[in-house]
Amino acid sequence: MVRILPPNPEAVREGARLLREGQLVAFPTETVYGLGADAFNPLAVARIFEVKNRPEFDPIIVHIADLAQLKELVTQVPEAARRLIEKFWPGPLTLILPKTEKVPGIVTAGLPTVAVRMPAHPVALNLIRAADRPVAAPSANPFGYLSPTTAEHVLTQLDGKVDLILDGGPCPVGVESTVLDLTAEPPTVLRPGGLAVEDIEKIIGPVRVAAGAAERPRSPGQLSRHYSPRTPLVVFSGRSYPDPGGRRAGLLLFRRPTQAPAGFAVVEWLSEAGDVREAAANLFAALHRLDRVGLDIIFAEAVPEVGLGRAIMDRLRKAAAPPVDGPGRLN
Image (cartoon, rainbow, N blue to C red; front, side, top):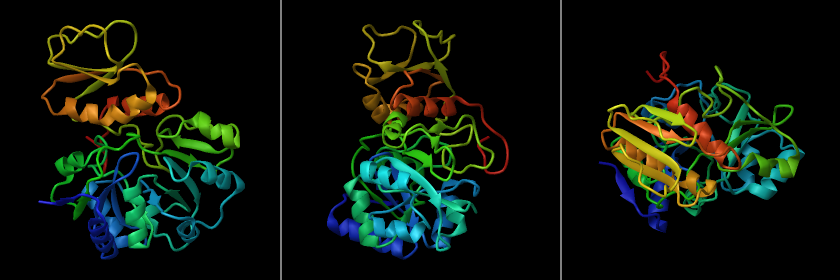
């Protein structure tokens, strides 16, 4: 059974030692729990793909603790990137920039760019500093499944496959980082996430938001089906609840209902009063709970696509997409 340790200095030093030795460490960030490996160790990064059953055409985000590490990863930092870094790092923003030759191709899926972010969680920053190297880290879950926002989620999904879990409690943001490609013109949001598109545009002006799935992803989260529970999920909108049709159904609502909806085995809500930030923080935990109680189907209410609502709807649409057959994909 994998070790789970509180993130005290001794445990962080142990995690750093494991990373330097080519092992895998799960750790909290402000967005979701990451499955970390030394970004400059191709064999260690290959273990991430093996453990997650992740297709090798899907690049991995590299996490840093200071701007000196950024210089090891990218060949140039344009002015737009500098302004965004000054405003939003540490934080839930990933930037795609031209990579240096030092970054292994397995990290970037052979692309000439690398996705980099500086997490805001103190445990993540302390671990990266102690390891003294950038850390490649996708979410700590099997590929395509619900992202983990607690150490328990990681243990349930990856027990025996990871060398250490640092338990930093629930992730406060609760959805993955926003990914912005600054090698594109105009700058393009490839994945909505924990930083609102509107906030980015206040700093660098209008950006494009990529639509649809990508056959060759430049960023995590660009495939058509992702973030999915085992239980089939359907997104609905409107003033009336869907008909369970005799099935054991769960209901995921945006805000707390004034009266308990009838006919559903389980009802969850993301926010007491309909706040999208609170809803984002609670999204994956609620879906994990619904996925564990033996439902036939989950009905999820659409949320307004403003601010972090855009990220929530991105996750719900991909969770509701039909399975995709093919090598390395969900089926």
